[in-house]
Length: 74
Image (tube, rainbow, N blue to C red; front, side):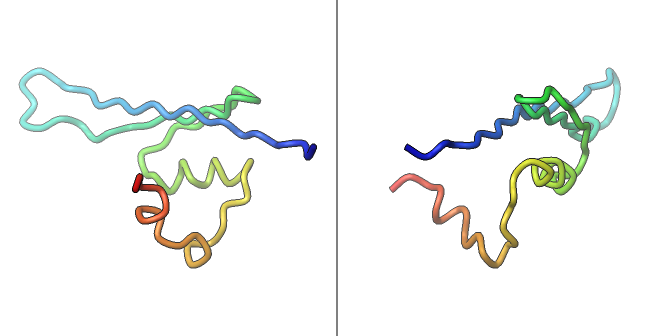
């Protein structure tokens, strides 16, 4: 049997709501690599993907195909 390599991540998003503010603050995120416990804070999804790419070889967009089409249930 082939040995599998696993890379797991936890994403957490927070948005602060200040009393009296006209609109809520921007969303902020934290991503954690489960195996190493390393964390990174981000405000743009591209930064979270860059963190993941340190552990997982993410294919260029043109090789990934339409994720919405391939990941949605039939």
